Image 1: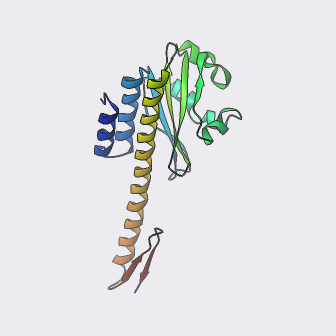
Image 2 (image 1 turned 60 degrees about the vertical axis):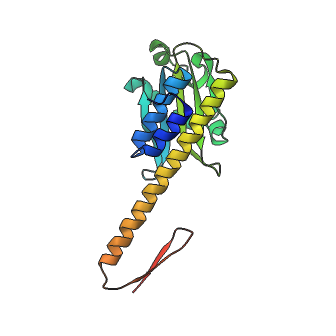
Image 3 (image 1 turned 180 degrees about the vertical axis):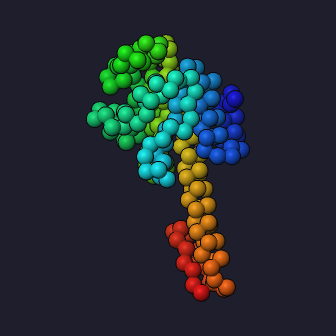
Length: 193
């Protein structure tokens, strides 16, 4: 379990896939932020929808309540799309539901996981059974976790796209005796035979 930002960075670089790496990020949230639960969901390009990829400490019912709903909410969704973090003390607003309170959740935050060009890649939720006063140190840790997690997700998406292109290329090359392959910097590939 990562006990520092440096340990999380190292764990992400050693991770073998999306679920492994995001599990490390979730564990870092619990350890470094004192969260009682955490959840990561991403905009999955393969599925064309938002998908929960890792969570810790949430019942399936509570995880389902957080599943993509806030991005659709007219007040919260635009903030996440603009890269703004949302704090919800006492879980007021769209998440003020009896099930959340019955489960003992008092406060939470949602941080957008954005790529370097500003695209929203995912959302990191942390939930607390008590109030959370992060201070500058806590916010700095949260920012670092979000940056590392977003970069990791971007790397996984790129790796998956590369593997798909490589598979298509190998399939195409298997059908011909000889071919010239031109790979463009923009990511496209042309095959001539």
